[in-house]
Amino acid sequence: MTPLTVTHSPLGLPARVTRIGGVVRRDFAALRRSPIRMFEIVFWPTIELLVWGFVTVFLQSQQVPFVVAFLIGAVLLWQVLQKASNEISIAFLEDIWSRNLLNVQVSPLSTVEYVIGLILFSFGKVVFAIAVMAGLALAFYGFGVTSFGAGLVPFMALLLVMGWSLGLVGISAVLRFGENAQVIAWSLVFVVQPLAGIFYPVDVLPEPLQAVAAFLPATHVFTGMRTVLDGGAVPWGELAWAAVLAAGYLAATLGVFAWTLRYARSHGKLSRFGE
Amino acid sequence: MTILEATALAKRFGAVTAVHEVSLDVGAGEIIGLLGPNGAGKSTTLHMLLGLITPDSGSIRMFGLDLERHRIEVLSRINFAASYVDLPGVLQVREVLDVFARLYGVRDPKARVGELVELLDLGPLRKRKVMELSSGQRTRVQLAKALVNEPSLLILDEPTANLDPDAGDRIRSLLVRVARENGRAMLITSHNMQEVERMCDRIHFMSAGRIVASGSAAELTDVYSADSLEEVFLKVARARPEVARP
Image 1 (cartoon, helix red, strand yellow):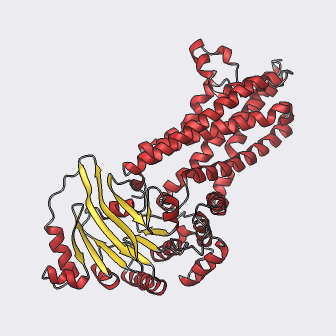
Image 2 (tube, one colour):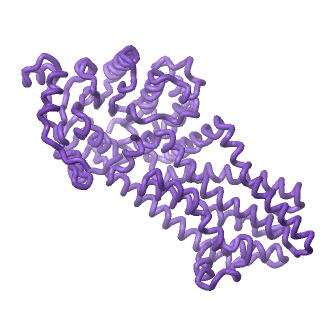
Image 3 (cartoon, one colour):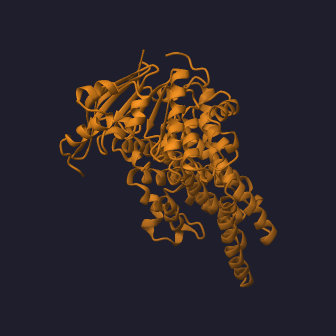
């Protein structure tokens, strides 16, 4: 092979970092040029925060204890999970909507680099949205995220990882079943909502569902959140188990994504996204 | 020097054989045309060469490397444009080029974008969103994107299909200039026979998934006792065997 001049050596670290930067740059530029998308980042979370906030105000007036912290805390952390999942799916789907997917897929961007780029950008958007919501929660309801204590970072990190896993499953579904499967990308995270005990303890679930819930990292995060807000210590043991689950799910969904991409190439499905 | 060597490529989709035992090669600086009626297997062949479709059998080597095993190295040195592929509409032209410069690992994206803007006369369009451009302008941006990594091989699937004759002619001139000045090889599909005749050094005719004729435009018209490449096309297309459709 003759040496390349205009580009970095394709397998070297500078090339990989540059390619990942390309994914982030693309998503950032698309966001910057679309005021509606920027508005949407905080619109829905804010609406949800306000609705649940007013519910807590009402329940508080009925002398229901701890309800403000529990519900507002749950809304904030639920948004981490939901946005992590949806943002990674949106970044991928935008390539399909703009008929740009083939351009990306014929570039030297590897699957891992692509996923890292999607994850980095979704991380930035989630952090921004949560920062705005946290400010509103403090201003409107006097709830500070410092109430999560030392659990704040692990709670958010575990939900981010789980959200990314769900997002990758959604993307894989679109690659496997076609554009119509994007409904899976949007709705998958809502399957988790009733099971993970976000707004109530999992004890209220029927026993078979409790068994399922035990294998969701989010369940342990929200249980831990209630423990901390109730004045208890961060349940590190439970969070460690959640971390094992989250890492396992992320590894598995990366495997599913890579397999689906191979399947799509083998069955000509990638080409059809260009039609 | 051979840049691309595809040997006995085959691809089936269910009961349909899209590509059957196709072999072709492209030398440095050559412009090769891949012609044939709709459904002949041209795009499937190109997509296999780009790694978008995995062949059922056969091999693809570019720059002496196997595409399957050296995907990143190979894709770093080729590029692609097609009439049915678009660029992110909300991005400005300069942003699109910058993004693709990064996706191809370009060392200095800003400088490279500047060079491409000058080469393709995109200066007045730099700050316009892709969605606001005409078909001809978009095609120019697509070509700029396709040149972002200074590819040794450009794969172009009907690049002028959506253009009026004037815009098409400008793009053809540009492509020929880029190929001749920089020694870039091109593999191009088109339904415009004049375009192919004007641009291509060699031509492969495909029909029902097979290459049924190869040669220069002059050789093909001679072999088929035709007055023009268009007549050759019609003879090839009308002689093709019936293909089962899914």
